[in-house]
Image 1: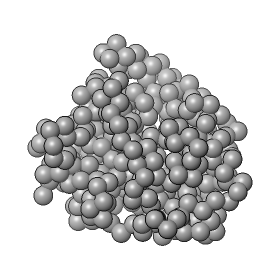
Image 2 (image 1 turned 90 degrees about the vertical axis):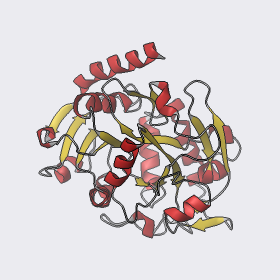
Image 3 (image 1 turned 135 degrees about the vertical axis):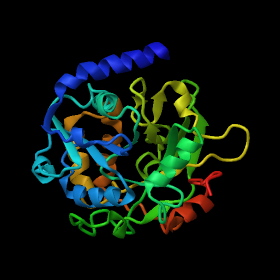
Length: 328
């Protein structure tokens, strides 16, 4: 594992040559700032609410990698003092599905910082997020000597067809997509990295009904007190050193955890899925996007009679989908 981590770090350094800075405000990063790192392509419509949401949470600086967007993303972000932006047209797949680029930026700019790594369609929630900023969480993690914090990816979706209600820039996507599966999840331990492996939800139920074992992984570790020797190894599902993956309790009880509300299923999804299928830049020959394309032609509804309407983090805690642990 040590050799694998070193190889990841070498890859990150090598792939740094693929990134061209378009707006470098990293000199404004203060020693105690909480950072957010994100790789994206053609997500400009999501950025107004995304930035509003995470600024409100207490994120101090955003490090974006734009992978060849053609929708005006760079122009939109230009001039924002809390945003640093890099551009690349290099292969997302050959950069470890973006992980090499993000490992590179975190190694250079995030050493000693708490860093949140999310996609533009993910809204991070944590215990007491309705009353406490993210710094309250990171302070508690620091005081508890905890270096990494997990969050289950929870797919949220509308009632009715995905394309029935158009999404507008700046809109809270949860106004449209606020239903989720409260059950239908399987959990196992990955012996290689020691992390939990979670699958299920509406994607397994609808898009991978015949092959649930191929459904996307829902386990993530998005929040880490970064060190330049750390590296993500498999998206944000697994980290190196291996001990950072021990985000669950093994002796009974529960460790604090969060959730990532995954707002993928808006009316923009069909075009996005087709674009990504044609690009062929995703994991396992884009098997996920092939499954989407096959089902989207049937205009499926993800909502079912067992769907739950999202209310708040406390609801997810009651359902066992996240935990406040011993943080009171």
